[in-house]
Image 1 (cartoon, rainbow, N blue to C red):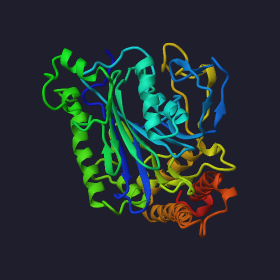
Image 2 (image 1 turned 45 degrees about the vertical axis):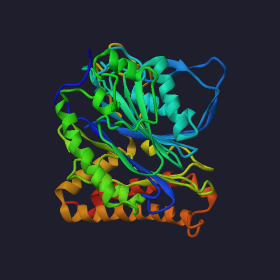
Image 3 (image 1 turned 90 degrees about the vertical axis):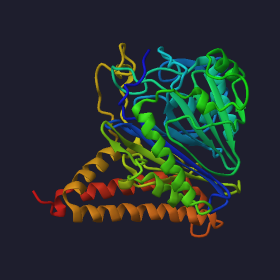
Length: 437
């Protein structure tokens, strides 16, 4: 059975704030994607689409039935696979996923990755609850499985999901094809590589409890605590470590109860002391996302994405669905067609260079930041200034459009910010700046 080695460094953290925990009348979603250190994550925009009856859709490993219509989505995804670690759709639905290991065995064969399920849910669900039902339906039909990293050695896991829209959030936790879900109508919640739904279950797989009884994990009497019943009795080292990170994340949210903003979520994602901003061994935070989903449907949702590793040294750039929304080429990785190592069998026998233009510029600039402190502080200040401009756009939109760009420019905001960030890195690494040789 393919799974994880006991000391495999793996983690992710998701956060959500639902009023009155938020400082504004909006749901605020956030996620750090912690992945293999050298993996490149791209930001992909896909417009809404219509599809012929009976058509099929190729996901990372398997095909599934396509639906007649799909929503426009923006995705932050490892560039080698079809799905995504996190993303949003045009209806204001956001989803992030987490790796977990449970008492249910990890499927050895290839099926849908949790990241495939996430993208499919965004393309097909117009609310958080509807997206959750998309995932559970696909899980029942196709199952989850397959290697989750670009490596000849399989790396497989089950998934938990945090789903949010303008009015509420849902936590969905899976164990094979089984699942439990918890509705979050108010307050703050986080996830961190462990089952966290206890007895407060809002919806569940119809065979969840009977399977627990049949396996001898639950006696059938008294309260049914999903996390307690389905968690491994002997947790892998990294899942044990996730407990401290989960607790730290919960405390950081509690400290800001009633005052949670986009900036507060960015600060949490940048917290290195807790391990939420990760840089440990072969893993690190490879991309981050913060979304503000106003409860007023007349106000646009604003999604901030980095497209680069380490949020403490990256820029959260605003994306808004609207007229002119298009793919930013600087954050799109090269493709390799049928010769891609994920497509050739056996898979992952070779490696290809998936770095996109912004990733290259960012990494070159960070390399200099580490060796030239004063210069690095200047670049860091430029990054923060650019980010503050994006946050001012958000503030203007929330203040009935005062000082915000005209509607016809909102769709091209992300592209404009990516271009400015790319230019800053190009200028900072140019020899003409008097760099010491």
